[in-house]
Structures are given as C-alpha cells and as structure tokens.
Image (tube, helix red, strand yellow):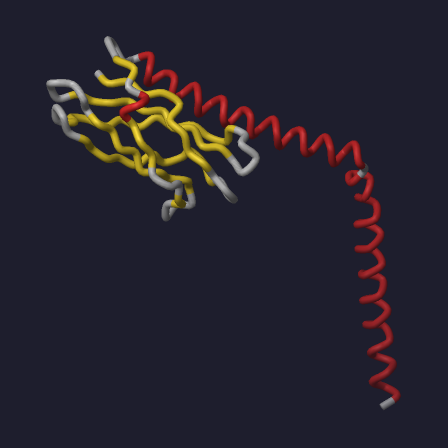
Length: 160
C-alpha cells in the first residue's frame, strides 16, 4: 500500500500545481474587469447595437426611396402582437386596408422597441396586390433576435 501512496503523491502534487497555475492565470486577467474596462465593454456593445439599428433603419429607408407617388396611409395599417419566429427573430402580423378604388401595394416600416421603449430594430415589409376596398396580411420579421418585452409600432406606411 505504501507503494500506491508514493505514486499518488506526485499526481496530487501535479494536480495542485496545475490548479494553482490556472488560478494565477485567472487572477492575472482580473485587470480586464476594472470598472472602466467593464464600462468600456458595455459602451462597445451599445455602440454595436446602435449601428445594427441604424443599418436596419437605413435599409428600410432605401425601400421607401424607391416608391414613386406613394400616399401616406399609416392609419390604414394595424399590427398584431409581436412574437418570436422559429428562427428566433421577432415577428408581427401586419394588416393593411386598401381604401382606394383600385388594387394597390403597400410598404410598411415596423419599428420594434425593447422593454425600456428604446428602438431595437426596424424592418420594411411589402404587401402586394391588395384589392380595392379590401385588406391583406403579411408578416414583418425583424433583422435580429430580441428578447424580453418587445413592442411593435408602425413608423410609416405608403400605398402605391
């Protein structure tokens, strides 16, 4: 039995040395967790989120730039309750009502807001060939995953 202890002692010592080395390495990284570093990382994440939203808004804006002779019909659009699609992205049902006397198409920008009311995403959805006096539904699908209490709003809508 004494022979077994002799063999275990070096293994235990090696395990202890590995654990101490790992602890030292982790402690050495703690400089990255200073309040200013944490604040810097948070600011970076916030900046990236702002860039994502600005990009989504710009993309929606490009689609509106392509519409010629569009009529503002924001009041003719209703939204359902936001949900989460199978891909994890926020979705909402969009219903448009065509009050014109001929078939029309609609372009609707939906803004998604987080639980704090901050803009989190924007998407444009086209609803084509809505019959005169009729209505049609489509689904607006966000550009990214959002969590928590998400609200959707019609930012703008045009009929053309």
